[in-house]
Image (cartoon, rainbow, N blue to C red; front, side, top):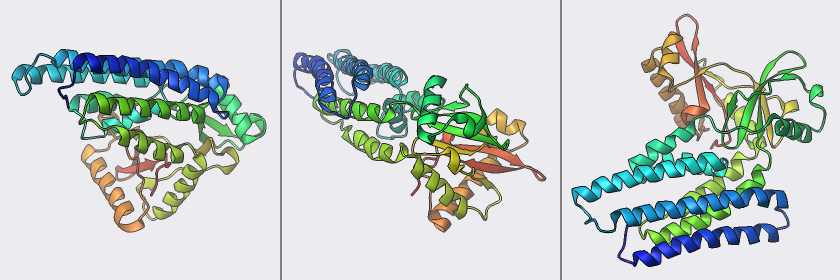
Length: 343
């Protein structure tokens, strides 16, 4: 990963890239008519934070390993320590900036090409993310649905039941009393994506210059293509309906029904379903299910999608599926949701 170029030159490059990247982004943001001033004001601090974090990580690798001989026990031990420190720096950056940065961290945590310290540390991003103020949620709902909230919902819980990198979920009741989950995209997300992808591209190019064998451009490319689908909740609603039809013959899968009157490109309303995460062993056991049955059931459902129906949920990380017991006998029933990535 580390070549023989001058450490002083590379340290200078890291600092210059940090400032130049943020400055380039600032100018590009204001020259793009589609990016509002408010978005630029939000994005510049995030971009500076990313650039500074990247420079700190680069300097840590170079300075910590500079006088150590590759292949020695001291080199290996120090390298593992730097991996862990750097992973925690990046985890903090992802949590502070949210949105695209969290998605990038999630993708990185599933990438076997990265050191174990990165994968295990960034796996924390698969859990609950940051949430937006309820006032922003209400504004998004009114704008997207085109009518007063009272015309669609009898009540909406202002506290999110779940929050992720792109959206958050609120429990609500329809006018007929039906309990639903209302997934609302974070305000300004599309503009944030534009800005953050620009900055991540700058950092990926910088990383390739600093570390000759490290190519992160694929990560930015994957993010760009995935986000184009994931930010369109109409696609998610359509995929949910397709999956429900393709698995309708299985009694061990429940797919939440979409409520069209409460849905749009940035809002998705579905029926509310209770369940526990498959990684919560205590919750699985407390509901009378055996972990081995849960694993077997999941394998059968995925096999059905791959080999029978041909329509596959492509984002089956633990935050995207729930499980609950079926009565007499107690066997797992899957609740599959969040279908932005179906294929």
